[in-house]
Length: 397
Image (cartoon, rainbow, N blue to C red; front, top):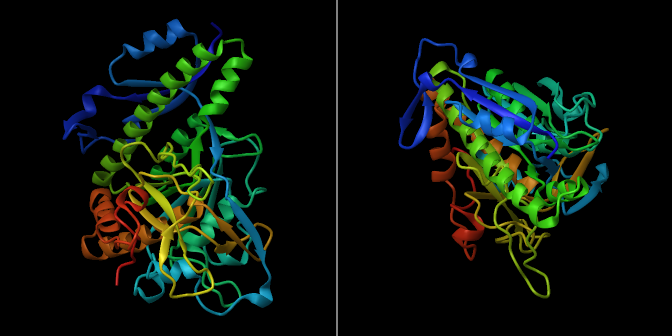
């Protein structure tokens, strides 16, 4: 068997305690950045097996990452916009919240950002390209998500849930050729080291693509599927270890919560309807997974909400994800639909709650932050727990 690309995660075993079954960093006098190392290595199967036997080391074969593509898109002409908040901002209660996200750093790990867009005027945008394709956003997905989280008003229209966020980290993990789980692991560590209290991700592991690549490399379908399942399992473990590491850093004043899209593979409106379970990385323990909601009557601002037909099941919370208006790469505004659009609403609400914790407690404890975001979600009539989790996330009043 040929060598393969592996993600190697090293955690010093002497710095790991077991608290409720999860690893946390134990020595407060140590620099947290030395406790974890994420690197990529080309290894044979025998070499990988040898690495697995070493204490404090996790290993996962790098799997392709794919964008959770929007299911609908439309440009929004400037003359059709009203000088009011978007329906998603109103639905989560951000328009009436006294908080704006001031003092909170948010990271968006996506396709990059158009930092020159009007929506980001006055925002300290820190770009980091992990793909080798350069900064910027040729796709527009990352720009749209960033606008929903922290965008300033555009021609009188409020698009941002937390428009007072002063600093946004734009980690480009998906380039023209896609990305890999090795990049998301590196980007998560970078974002935490840069002080992000909220990390937003609208991407997923491409399981079919990994199988196809193995088949193209000469493996029979059965063997390729088996290898993909093993890689999938290992990547979930690695992501869960990263999540535990992130949570542990609050002791050093550097921590955050991980918010990720549930995925758009369900078809509730098909002739033979079916649903798909939440996709990784959102499926990993420690991630806040997000389902998408839409208005039953899109033209009625008081319309009841329903789960979007494409939204995967098993998410922790839900947020507006249909006909979401936000920043378009190159200028102007665009409407997109998908759990990718619901995720930044949750990240924005999390930034508002993080500000509240910072003011009340003096530190953003990720466990408390998750409690606030999930615990204050509102039950949605006719939306089951399986489809909408705890319910619609709600900004602090």
